[in-house]
Amino acid sequence: MRNVLVVISGPSGVGKGTLVRALLAEDDKLVESVSCTTRAPRAGEVNGREYFFISKEEFRDRIAANDFLEYDEHFDNFYGTPRSFVERQLKEKSVVLEIDVVGGLNAKRLMPKSAVLIMVAPPSLEELEKRLSGRGSEDEVQLNERMRRVRYELDQAPLYDYVVVNDDLQRAKREIQDIIRKEKEKTI
Ligand code: 5GP
Image 1 (cartoon, protein in one colour):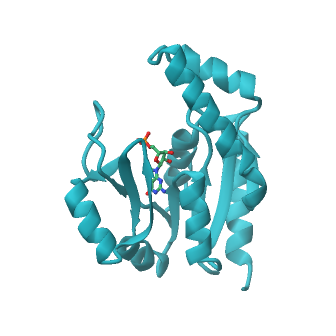
Image 2: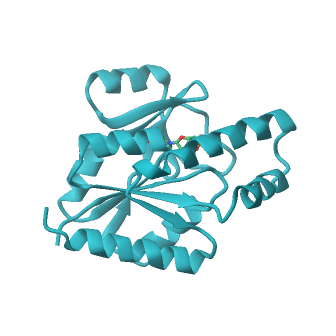
């Protein structure tokens, strides 16, 4: 069986993080790649767990050294997937990346044989909007901007290999586990 690079994308609030944690907890042949970012850590985030928090200067140096498999800019900050970690891990295990659609499509372009793109979608846009506004952490302008981004991400779904609707965590998790199993069995 081969190892695959599982890219999990989808709009914020859709439950990607919870799904990824559930997948990792049940599969010791799956590891997560921790991205680098130049944004400041949020409360509760730990360096090396959610992200490696690095300066813009270091990020630029690492771009120049070809250290990132892919990278992108969001809201004035850089985010990137460390190449050496992914390449090393893929020799032993499958690797999961939780990144946005631009990063996912770049990963597929760079590693077309290994990358499996999975979009996690909400049961409906209304449902997701309710969930996001329920967080209460954003004003209306920010919420509109976020919903614009949500629609953009979901519009890219046809470019992904699979779309999994997160209507129920256990069901969605099993669907992704089936996809990973099937993809690992493919001979390419
Ligand atoms: P946040 O700042 O909310 O943690 O993440 C902002 C955005 O950056 C999210 O859409 C997230 O998926 C994306 N992101 C996180 N890590 C990476 C990465 O390594 N590469 C790319 N292209 N996007 C990333």
